[in-house]
Length: 159
Image (tube, rainbow, N blue to C red; front, side):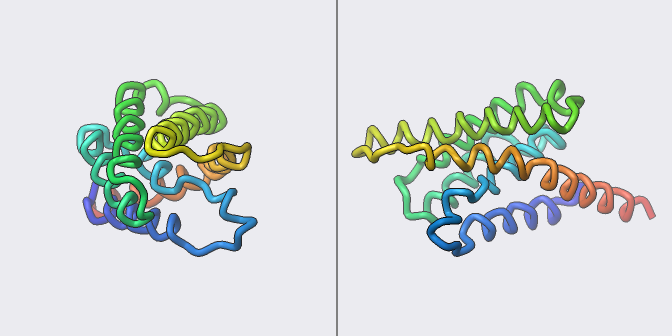
């Protein structure tokens, strides 16, 4: 697998995460970086793992201007959990993978809410949890797109 493809997919996820949206649509934004991290942790767990999640989380912290380490810790934990269960999850049907993504997004959002609460608190409403649902709905498309990208890169290398 070409490292450039992995890097480009993370850059696209970062761009999608920072894309300006109307106020009504912001609550429905999927956790793009988490989705791409989950895919690559399942596909190539020997190369993408906790350190990658931590580094991407730091980039996200700087990009959002949030408490430094908040997203880094959460994405590192998500990468750890996916790396533990990647052999099981890879063989799940796509709808079961979507449920797993939903659970990972809940964990991610709970961790970031916990850190924010410790740092000074903010009110959590139902809207805070919406990205977990939208991430689960978007997962099949992300999975198929990255799987096709991975297959194209592998088959083009064989030629």
